[in-house]
Amino acid sequence: MNKSTKKLVYLLGLQVITGLFLILAITYQNKIMMVTSLVILIGTLTYLALVLVQNYRDNQIVDRLTQSVKNINAHEAAQPVLIKPGEKYKELADAINNLSDTKNEQLRESGLVDNEVLKTVNALPVGVMLIDQSSNVIFANPQMANILDRKIASDAHPYTMDVINYKLLTMIDHVFDTHRSTRAEITETTNGNKTLDVQVVFSQNNSSFHLIVIAYDISEVINITQMQVDFLRNASHELKTPVTAISGFAKTLLDGAKDDPEVLTEFLEIINRQSDQLTSLINDILTISHIQKDEVKLTDSVVLRDFVNQEIETQSNQIKQHRLQVHNLIDEHIEVNIDAESLQRIVRNLISNAVKYNRDDGEIMINASIQGNFWYFSVQDTGIGIAKSDLSRIFERFYRSDESRNKQQISGTGLGLSIVNELVQSLSGKITVDSQRGVGSTFTVRLPRK
Image 1 (cartoon, rainbow, N blue to C red):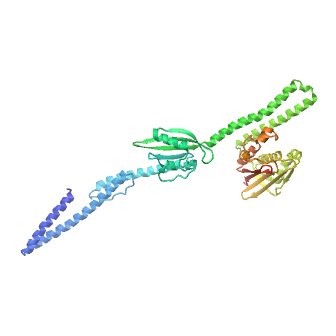
Image 2 (tube, rainbow, N blue to C red; image 1 turned 90 degrees about the horizontal axis):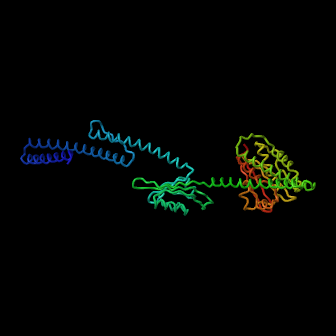
Image 3 (cartoon, one colour; image 1 turned 30 degrees about the vertical axis):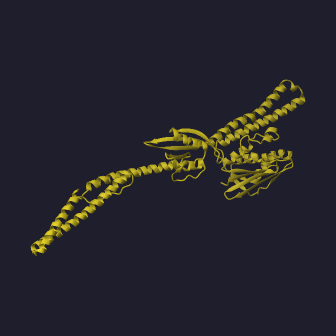
């Protein structure tokens, strides 16, 4: 029994005794005893009321201090308990308040750190997913949702709702069973071919554990690597053809064919053509290398119609050879600001492409327009067109359709459209193609006006 309870018992006992004396005083009509009993009774009642009030206040303070301690233990923010100097529990309240302030500061700093960590994880180009030991996803950053191509709920839910790739599911199950981290490359085909570098990390925390799934889309890296391999292979192939021809005919001439004037002339013409082809190929490769340096380009003011007419004139021999009609439909007032050297290569390659892949007696329509913050340049031909299977690859380096590559009906290095595409991109533009087999093709370049 604590002091407050004992005090209440004593007061109640005193009131009972005083009450008995009061009854006796009334019974015997003893005024002195009656007054004395009433005074004692009123005094004890007043004191009892004060004790009850103080006891109530003490209980409130104890409850608040208890709640503060509970909040501190639960790592939650606690409100300070304010007590006047000299009052009961003052020292205890001050000690708990100091502890609460320290804990609140730690929670605030921890919250800031957690917030920064969350921002960092959400900004990562790597997908991150946290799975608890109950197999529930408790966190996933936006990049993981993009990689899995699924909307991931923020509340806890089974990871099988998000992960549908069999190999990834097998990896996660394996880590759950063995408690050992693992890593592998996974091909994701649910939304186009995608290659992922996935690591499932097992993390132990006292008696509990969780899994961290880290996924990185390496498709672009693999594609670039493959493009480099294809570039070297195709470059070797394209270089080998003219070099072999030049070497072969030169050796034939040295072995005695040079003594026949007709054969000598024919072979020298072939060597000359192959030399031109080799020079053209080397120049195109150097052009691509120059584009990749991302050098600062000077801006020139160009009257587009006159500029295109000059390029048409440079290719007049090839145009006459195929009896083509070229229509320059560009308005004479259209003037653009652009690097003239880059524009020359773009226009030259597109017109050359339209000439090479056109039919005899065909047509080429060249046009341009200004729309908002962009200007458009298009070259349309009435040629053989492009098969649907080739449309997605025509801007790759050295790519030519099987017909032109195998039968060699159309000369070229296979770098023209690749050069155009890279030049357009270097100018913050975009090139598109619309083509139909046997009808013709239209290449459209969109470039910013400034």
